[in-house]
Structure formats: C-alpha cells, structure tokens
Length: 347
Image 1 (cartoon, rainbow, N blue to C red):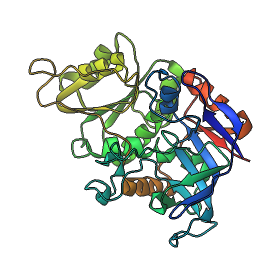
Image 2 (image 1 turned 60 degrees about the vertical axis):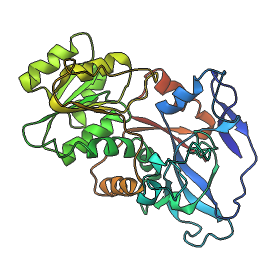
Image 3 (image 1 turned 180 degrees about the horizontal axis):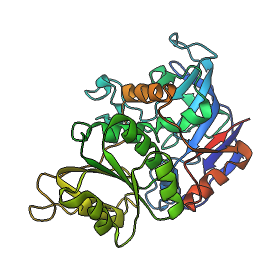
Image 4 (image 1 turned 90 degrees about the horizontal axis):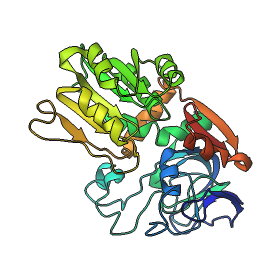
C-alpha cells in the first residue's frame, strides 16, 4: 500500500510503498477515508536527528477517519464497514485519567512507550491504518469524512481548551483568539456558538483576518508590535477574559499576557517552537491570571465535537489532496499558504 512517511529527521516526508498491516488480537484495520495534516507534523519533521524520539520510518497522520476493514481476534464490538473517527491520544486505558476517558493525560503513557498514531506509531497518511484498540474508534454515521478528519484534533483540541474557560465567558466578556488558521478558525466558531463573548481574532495577514470575521470573529486585529495596544483599545481597562494562543511562539505569548485582564485565562494551545514561556509573577500580569497549556482532549469530548458538527455548528475549511499529491499537504501549511486544514484523501 502507499503511505506518506518520515524517513529521516529534518527532511521532507516521502510517499512510499509499504506492507499493509495485519490486525493482531484486539486490533482493528481501517481503510482510510481521510487524513488531516497538522502543524504538529511539521514540528516533528523539523526535530533534530540527535535524540529524535520516534522509530523510523513512520507513517504520518494523527487525524484519521476510515471504514473498518478487518478486525483481529477478540474484537466483537465494531463491525466491518462501519465509518469511524480515530481518537488520537492513546493511553494505557486503566490509569486514573484513562478511566475517565482522558487518555490525553494518561499517567503511564511515557512509562509504557504509548504514543499517538502518526506521532510514534504508523498513522493515517496511508491507504490503511492499524488501530491498537476499538475503544479509540468513534462512529461518525453519515458525517462527511473529509470534514470530519480534522475534527479529531483541530476540533477536539480547541474545544477542550475553551471548555475550561466557559464559566468565565459570560455576557460582556471578551475572548481573544491568536492565530486564525487550522485550529483557530474552529475555535472562533466554537466560541461564537458556546458563549456570548465578543471575539477578537489576531493574525499576521489581512486575508487571515477577513477569514476570521467570516467564521464569526467580532473584531480582527493584526498580530504585530501594536497588537497589545490595539486589543486594549477594544477591551478597555478590563482586558480580555480569556486568550487562546493557537500559535505558541514567544511574540504571540507575550501578546496574550499583554491583553489578558484580571482573573483572566491565558491558554497556550499552539506548539510554536516548544520554547515560549509565559512571564508570571506578582507584579508581572494582572491579578489572578491563570495560565495553562492543555493537550488534545478526551474521548467523550470528541463525541461532543462530532455532535456539534452534526448539528451544523462547525464548518471546517479544508483543502483536499490525493494521496499521490499528499506531500503538498505538508508543504502548504509549512509555507503558511493554507486557509484552514489540509486533508489527504486516499483513493
């Protein structure tokens, strides 16, 4: 079968012919319908060779939707032909967090070398994908697989990030979204549906700001040296109630800390270069500001996101690529030349 794999750190992925997986006991083989490309993949592709954490070659793709093609022995709770989304942050299944469906925070994943598909084991950028346990599959019914695949990360991650701030986002409050790209444009839609807050979107181009307003932002501000002053001109002395940074580089995090108000939230979602830090101290930011860095989301939250999609709340902007052209699905986001998400459609 064909698969897009990372073969060597610091280089472009390659489209290769690889052996088709055979499901072992308790495993499920999916015929992939759609696979999303993500900036997290770009982060992995640019990791230095020294200390690279994953075995290579490795098939990319941690946003996957497919149809059950084959099941291993002992699997009797999913049927062949069922359309499913893959819940990506796999865990041990039995620790305190996993028992609550929060495998994204599995306390034993590192100890047991458990990694998500496409981020440690072979993922969805292929004609077929092996899933280690049927509990990681969520039926999608008649949802469009192309628009559903990004929801497994680009929908689930902002939903989880926003959910914890919902009690604060009441009438008269302001939410700031930094980065109106793949995750950010979904976050704006979620905020518009789930809260009465004014939504201020920040990005580096007028085109992205126009896009942000199309999907529900109330105000749009260029992310530049004047961003803090320009956002503060809108919010007044109260500042922002919640700031969601979907970029994660130092300049954007500095903006987030500069616009947040008293008792506000700063939520670091974007991976950036992995080195950005929030400056926190008694006299550094307004009183009682909370800073958190959530990771992905729970299995039940993925179900909630899919229900929102079914209700027409989410309209993910996607650009489709055939598997043979799938390398462009990574080149375009890396060049910041994409509106929304890139989705690879095998076959």
